[in-house]
Image 1: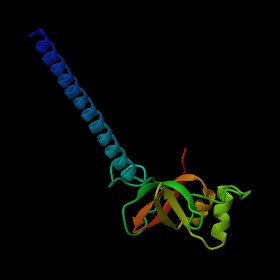
Image 2: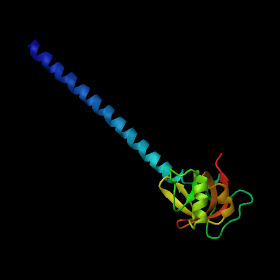
Image 3: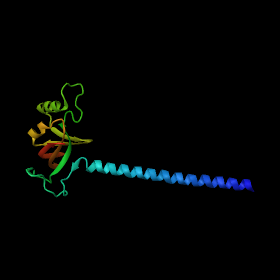
Image 4: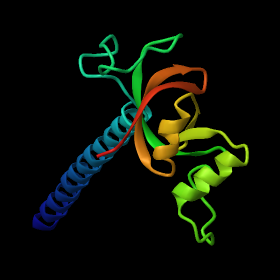
Length: 156
């Protein structure tokens, strides 16, 4: 009888341990899934475009003219050209800024690259030339895949 009781206690102990391990793994997986979902949402909305403080209807900074066609927003990314994109020729002796400027002189267009997103930049070519090959804030409005540039500033 004592042998049967020990066997029953061992089975109960193993079952309880298995249930506790299952709950722990379920909690870890649920937390990881929620974390990845939040990270994807943040990178899809907060990293690529940022609205001005006060919400989407807030006014742009003083001195930023409003282009026709939409609300002004701040876009953050690498100012480069549509030929090289975010990756310039690594064997080139010139830096990414000069490579971007050379491609623009040869007929490429300015683009803003942030991760997998790429936006054609229209207007503000003198300001864009000053920040070529660098990460910058672009104030403007989005129309399709084109940002109508109002102002440009380097990231701090």
